[in-house]
Image (cartoon, rainbow, N blue to C red):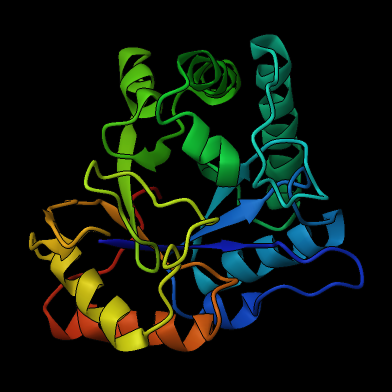
Length: 250
């Protein structure tokens, strides 16, 4: 099982999360690419930290929306979105290579991640960017999404993800952050859910039903309150349950 986190989201004088501490816990780092968060120096430092810690670097591409942290849907034209994703991939890969590593997978961020669960045109635009840049890069996304379906059709390796600290709808999609209870903060509950996900068990959806998510990778958000402690507890619980932790891309 892979354990990933969103990192590199600080910008200038504003610090978000503890990247150095999270790099000692996760196996993969979804590093911002400067469009929704992150400045070049922050991104280079995170890539350097990942290289030193043996953590795999992935490009977390998003909408061009610093003010909204990439959590607002943008009705971008497909060609524009493809170019934006290519731009982000090239920028982060350059910084990663200078830091002694490279981008090894792609994960959309925020509103883009949620949009391409069903938005066929935008999903195809992101897939096109990955294919044009490097078709050997795996893509990380929500099981059952248009994004993973189109990526598989294009010959890309797809990796299904679940979220440690997010509530799910009965359909297996994420509950909107605008709704109460969308983000889980109880470390005990989060830890139990992660063990269930990783061992083939079920978790409760927002309506009290049961879901079997069967992820290849579990995301622990770096900006959740108490994120580092939660991530440490999740890692410890998974190890205690006999789950081997390793990056899905090397």
